[in-house]
Length: 371
Ligand SMILES: Nc1ncnc2c1ncn2[C@@H]1O[C@H](COP(=O)(O)OP(=O)(O)OP(=O)(O)O)[C@@H](O)[C@H]1O
Image (tube, rainbow, N blue to C red; front, side, top):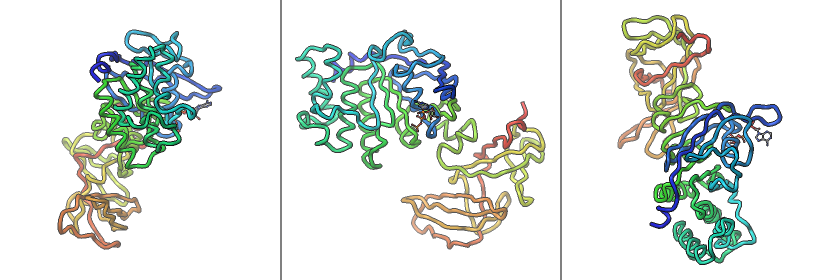
């Protein structure tokens, strides 16, 4: 293990202005981000937003139309896929079915012309790392899905890559197994310190694994931040709704009083935000807030929106309430259950107090944003 730690050189990945199209249709436009040596970053976004295209360009499997990719101090433009020193793991394991587990792991080492004796030693080291020491002589089909994926990870890191690319690596596995493998991968990645890029559309996976998230939408990068910053300070409505759950209210900026903004909601209701928004009076806005930022009570109060309970669902330690405002907008509230928490009856008239310090405001129409 010590040998392994010293031999994988930690490198910085620098992606600048990456642009690619397939047959005239732009798949990614001006994608830029960096991954610091030893860092793990997740590329996250809805299906078709261009994640795999970015990964393929970094791996050298496609030639991007524009942009620059540097690993360490090396520009990869003229470096073949094979010579890039990148380990890859795909969703579908992609193990050679006719080779044993040990032969699969040894394969990239043979390509690198590593001596037979060292190959044997490294395969044993890798098998131990992914806790499959007893399985070296089995064929892939004699392993479970989770075990096969661990072999794929072992094979990807056996060649001591300076960059590890993972494309939906646990997508085919069930939830519990995914979690176990995520923890294992995190441990391995930290031990080896390999600069890692993981592509996923699973936001929980991204948040639990990565130091930073690169959020993509329609071929563009929308935000690059830590998982907490992306959750707490989303830069766009897309990011706000893609990460975690969120409530949305359509509103109009009515006026500014001192350091507050009065928002008009439908049905003559209002909401006062305790800060001056960067919008002009009359702007149409979308106000967002998380379910945990809504407190329900049976009594009306200032800043409370009347709402009728549709259903309450206990989810482990949390009670999730779905409600409907008078205007027909749905609202979700959540609270941590404590002994004695009562589940209200569907149809109950309740009052939703929104934590206005945590609300975000986004333009409902782009042209209403003031500068
Ligand atoms: N070989 C190809 N030929 C033509 N269009 C392609 C090709 N590969 C991808 N695309 C298109 O490019 C866009 C980006 O695809 P890409 O596979 O990079 O997205 P993705 O975010 O990885 O999606 P998913 O999460 O579904 O795998 C999509 O519109 C897709 O249809």
